[in-house]
Length: 199
Image (cartoon, rainbow, N blue to C red; front, side, top):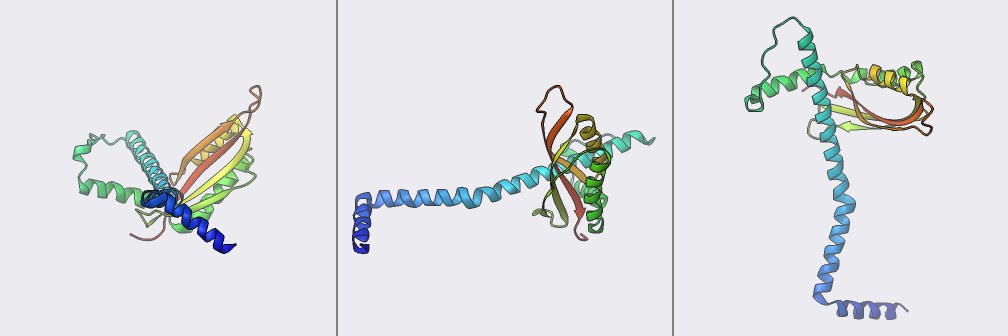
């Protein structure tokens, strides 16, 4: 039986010829790439998007603080004026504003405690995190929370949580099954950021 199978396989391969074998090889490489390489590339793109979102939030918060202060506001530099020294200074301030690793558990716990206080039900939490590939001294802990609440409670909770500059909102998907009710279900993805180690 095995000899017949091998003979059929040999006959089939002979019918394919070299062009067919090369095509099969390329198809196998394409399948391996889509299975192994593409998810890793997508994860890196997601990480870079999250970094950009967090840094933008930091810069917006710094701009608001400066606007509130009585100091005269200096002209915002344009892209061409962002020298390496200025970029290092901006990054240094951003990195210094991140909490240390010792505060991480308390900040994650505060997210859940605030939900309970404001009437937001969180049945489960999924955690996913790690040091950033491009910035290994920065840790990102993502929390994915399916929640149930009234719309005002959800808005109040997110407003309270996002007052912490070390927390960013990655995604928010809201579903309201009954248009006449203010009760909604949502999937909230948050990232808690901290300094993993000294620079």
